[in-house]
Length: 365
Image (tube, rainbow, N blue to C red; front, side, top):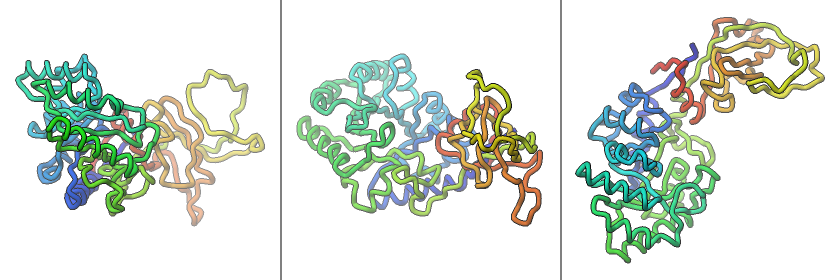
């Protein structure tokens, strides 16, 4: 069985480094664990007291994962990082100490659920800054906050935004400054303290040392940098963080010299995906290997072979075919055989899908 190998010490190192970096700049942050898909063994290995002592909260986009977070550590402050669905409101209040919100109807329902559970539920209200995902319209800001401040079991602890996620709108200084100005406006209008301006993420981290983040923007929601050591702004390593915490290893279950071009009438009935081929390669052959995973486990676009001589040929539901070229080492020896492993570096989405698969082994370093 193919396996995902996880270096938990590398992840722990990254979390501590990010905590130190943000503390130096007087910023709070939430560790966003959604890539882990609620894997309790992995969360237990990482969410140790000495690792998370300088973290504001731990967040996820799935209630089932928040439930597991509370099971791992009941004292964790948890944050639900997408607007809640009305049907799950009771569980949101039960398992999330904080939630991100954009709908007054939803916040009213959270208020009623919090009353029933004898709780005060905290909310961060998301504001639309151009990414066109979640967020209330800016011209509705004052009226929206005015109504929410009247709810007895809701505590508004800040405002936030999402940038760089769907369309890739960059978190420029001017964009983030808008959040800070909205905070000042709301505090002056209603005489209410909003401790958090939550506009930062992994994409924003490199901007801090460049003085491209307003001083008042003080809360980051970070997943990718903590687990992969990179910032998606330029997809580069951030500071000296570990970038190799995840390795995907697949087993070769068949290896043979085969034609480069399929033989027969090609129909539209195929369920897999294949690489393009050149008609001039007709009658040419190459060494092909079949690996023991497929589309049900991860997409080919979310894994990159460490051996650059390995190239993609095709993938179906439970098998992937790769081209090994001449399958020789530099000194002419055979490189791979049946039973050998091909190693890949998975992307953020690749890890998320692999951890969701029932057919992949998980091992820890």
